[in-house]
Image (cartoon, rainbow, N blue to C red; front, side):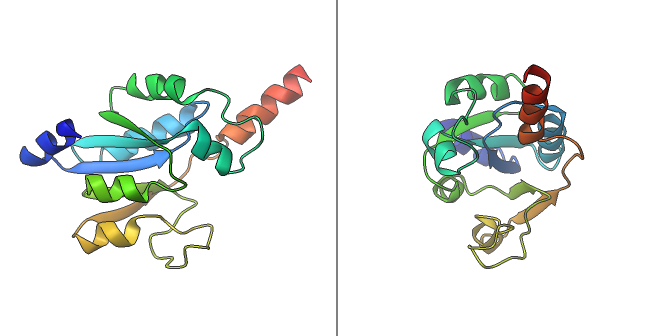
Length: 157
């Protein structure tokens, strides 16, 4: 968090996004690169192994543990920091960082106010309250971790 405070003192525009990023694919990379282009610094909140399990993606997920996923994300030149969170949502992390821009993929909407709606964007209301923006980036068709895993099962099955 010291690094984040330094970036803020330097007047850098901080972009925050989050996710599991289990099997990194072209959709993830395209998304993260676009997210970074919206500001000066990109911080990625990474779901811990435990929070990923609670998302009910599948009993086998995550495929890679949180430290392995963090190493892969940190290797991307346009990712400036990766912070692992164990909560069900990244809200506490968003409140601590107070990013200028919150970014999520096209399956979310910053205009949904019902937290039970699948398109609800956690933290959007809070980021807007301190003058920030909540932005949605279109997903890249044909790329998802689930699709990748299904292809692998089909090929090896």
